[in-house]
Length: 310
Ligand code: CP
Ligand code: NVA
Image (spheres, helix red, strand yellow):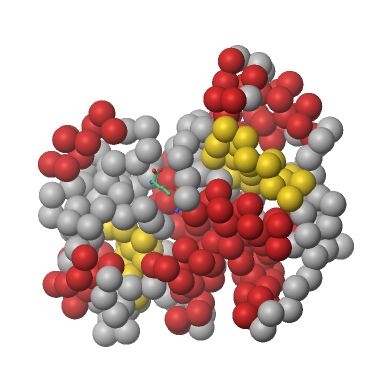
């Protein structure tokens, strides 16, 4: 057994560089096994509970098919249909579910709530997106970057847009693995000082992080250009203000042309063509977004095997 057995993944802060690479190596192995049609089912008889407070396509389907392919089963649990949605304490929910399930995945509004759930659960809890983090996404992103660039060390990643959950996880991914991240966001949408401090404390590269208001500065010479929606789930009432604030932050062909000639474009999806990215970029030759989305499956299978000690 290795060191990840029995542990939760709430943020990439929870993993060492070696543990991240362990999961990424395992994911690459699972992907090539699957492509060859070889099936391994070490999670026979295991159950994953998947609690969702928000919508999902990728997270839901990749976790459910992932556990099934490994021999186990996934239970989709809409938070509103659980007693949790009627006020049953998070701690009680954690203790009860720990008696039935082998692992929990949760997509929640509040990261604090997920921390509370994990604190009271006796089984691993995997964060499937909160207001603060999206670690499974960042793992799939790293797998995709590795497939194109063969290394993470020294890779220049430009993130353009709202510096919230996905950007935070990419910042920790960079700090842990030796990528250099440049984040371009308008004032008011830049990373929280607390996140910047924590990520900076992890990295020993003084150039690991650059925060700017200029997409041009962030993208110049970059190896990876990344963006996410301007209005995240739950922020719909801010849509108008956000459209105005992010004007000028669209990833378009001019921005792609300023990056390295072999740069790739990534987006966690879902995407809004004509807002944060043009159709020409996301549907163009440099886009790796569907490979990135597929890698959610492989990397989460690796993660489930790791936390279940297989
Ligand atoms: N990228 C991502 O997490 O997608 P879903 O919201 O569809 O799960
Ligand atoms: N930032 C987006 C990511 C969706 C996968 C959101 O929180 O809605």
